[in-house]
Length: 126
Image (cartoon, rainbow, N blue to C red):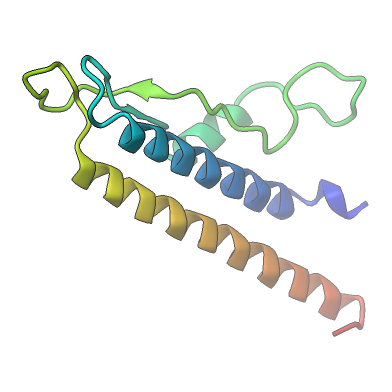
C-alpha cells in the first residue's frame, strides 16, 4: 500500500540517480589518464524524472509502460577541453559532480525521512 506513494518513489529515484552519477564521476576519475577517453555525465535528475513521467505509466506489473519513478540512467559523453593525448576528463569538474551527487543523495534521504515521519504521525505513531 505505501509503496505506491509518489513521494517515496521520487525520493527512491533521486537516490538511485545520485548513486549512478557518483559511479559515472568515479569512472571518469579512474580514466583521467587514459588516452582518448571522453568524460561522461548523466542528465540532471529533474530532466530525467520529468522525461520518465511523460510516458505511459505502469500502475500494475501486468500493464504496459514504465514504472513510476523509473529514471533513464544512460551516460552522455561530454567533450571538455582535451589534453594532448585526447583525454577529456577534468578532475576539478569530476570533484564538483561528486559533491553534487552527494548533496542529491542527502536530499533524497531527507525527503524520505520527512515523508516517513509525516506518514507515521498521521497513523498515530512516533
